[in-house]
Length: 614
Image 1 (cartoon, rainbow, N blue to C red):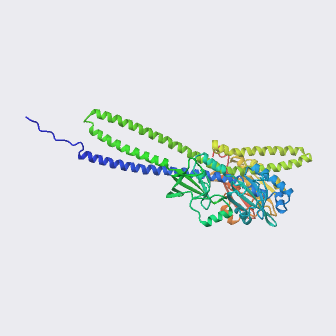
Image 2 (cartoon, rainbow, N blue to C red; image 1 turned 90 degrees about the vertical axis):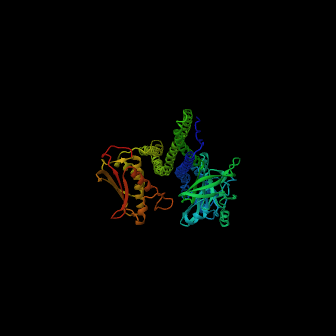
Image 3 (cartoon, rainbow, N blue to C red; image 1 turned 60 degrees about the vertical axis):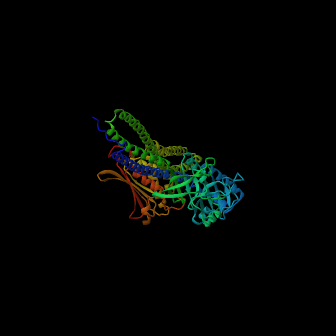
């Protein structure tokens, strides 16, 4: 009997086609979703890194300029410089030339020169080089000259018309009873800053308020404009010769979508490989982030390469697609398991190899992410160190001034033969030098081991050391002291930094009483209890002019000062406020009922608990 023929099965039935369609759809959706998620996460990480880098670059620029901003004001107070401006003679010119040469070499600036009120340079640190000397040149067309003549100070970046070298110029007017008789100018070389950027492989550029790039990690971007410049702007730049001899051609920047505050997708021509000072034809996509430096009128722009973002997104999409495909393959293998054991083993081995390869890729990606996180942490520490460098210069300035005072008095005492006092002064100078070493070690300790330790500090001893630094001035100005600090008053803090707080407040009190008839200081310390915790309240009262109502809200702001230009940077109260706060205390100010101001420091009692790191 003949068996009936079995029905013919098609290799791809409706179920197989439906399964393949669903697998393709799920794979596409998973790959798209993973790509979008990974791209967004990677872009967020790039933005965070860019913000960290921008903070570091801003600090490096501020520190590079801040190291020299005292030079013009100091030069305008030199008696020989004022005499030269008032009555130029060759003998005075020679003396000032040599003095500017020494000061410029000590500070490490590019140039230091003196200009009269007509813009004529009378003396310069580079007077020995006839080809580069500023002496005899006229600079009244430069904006820093006009600014200083009108407002007392000026700042300006430009290419030197004499040397042809770029630099940042800081100027300060020399004021006398006859008005402004001239000004002092220091030129700062910012080339080392951008060389550091280039050496680190960064893509950084700094633009002025016209959008002209004047600092950049790639030479091909310098002295180019982000966008075509209007004729009026070009005419103004030609008049001031800010970028003397530069064409200021457009950089070729193309802006795309914004991806966050201060972040935008852009594209730029890559620098030519054979000519790093020019741009090639190929364009490259970047994420551009910017930060404004209002005190300079500049904008820092950081460019992040988007190629790693694309690679990470593509990798995530591939892994998601492979995961879906692996699940689909597992389901298909489950259905085909009964058909043939051999095909199952071969497919299983293939899957294991693929899983091992993708696992290795995931491990490598995780390692890259960990390294990136460590770099971000290190960048944060470097940014903090950049901020602390300005405070170090301010803190060392006071011991230096005391050393100069002791040295001057030691010479007089030595001439009189008072050897005991000479030995005492020399011992104090050695102590101040050791104190400067301790102060300069604070930043080193921060970079290596973190914040300094907090210990029990006797308030009376810290106040005595602070008064010792200011004793000559208080004695000369006839300031009477009324000190009522118990010997058992001990607070939690660092001795050197607490003395620095006392010195800042005592100096401010002396300044406030400069024109007062009754010059007396009252120093006291009393135990108090706040929220069940024992503390000491230290009060420094003066009989000066008091605190104006308009200044109370900004009293502890950085760089806020009511003193004349050149008399202070406005950092003393801000630094003191930060030091006291780090010790777990508070600093406030109020006016006395009978006149003058009172600064109140409240610090935890050291006897209340064992000293511990803050």
